[in-house]
Length: 310
Image (cartoon, rainbow, N blue to C red; front, side):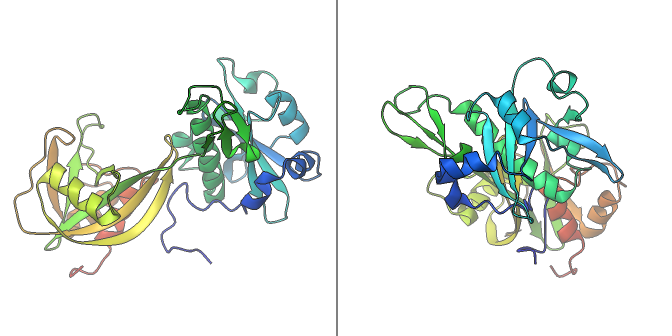
């Protein structure tokens, strides 16, 4: 049974992470030699996929080949156990030469997760998001932030140790509040100058230290539109592995007042009636919403389908 009625793209990793076993290097090594173990391959952030009857899906390679390509533990990540109890690892490859044209020829093609999100099975999206986020963290934490010395991989790829000052480093997730301000049967969307022409979306921003989710939501709405938040309702969340964010989806009731774009983060804001949102979801209208993989669209769809009094 799903934990949430709203399963966003990149959520729903089906693996049992068995995090307690990450501390057992002998057990991890055994899994790489156990029948049934498979490995997902990534290259510069792109995932190796194969075409099937139902469309593309994550390709699996044999652990022996993965170990050979990895050349050690540094590029391997223990993902967890699947429903059959078989281990799943991920391999992080780098460099300018496409491995699908070399040692991985015939095993699939590498593709960007943003492009794959609409067509991959939900479970594959969840696994790929986890692996990509950890690999992005690994690339950014090869040196200790405390003393500057090189770090070493530990616990199946989920920790890095500094042998010099003994500091332990763990993958980080940056929380982002993303919210739909609503009032009197209308919702507010905003637009950034860098977006495609006509694109509008929910308001959003990174949480700051010492803030609750509700406080961050109210601050961002005030900063970006000048409106005051009265109440905040949680909708759902979404892992967003670009590089490692957690989008916290909210519906915010705002007080009466004139909405004005701050001209720093947003160039324009616009109030929309519920009927207008429904048309935009059907790709009808003079502006566009984010694609279905984005939680911003799911917030709009949820509000658009709500009772008129909501």
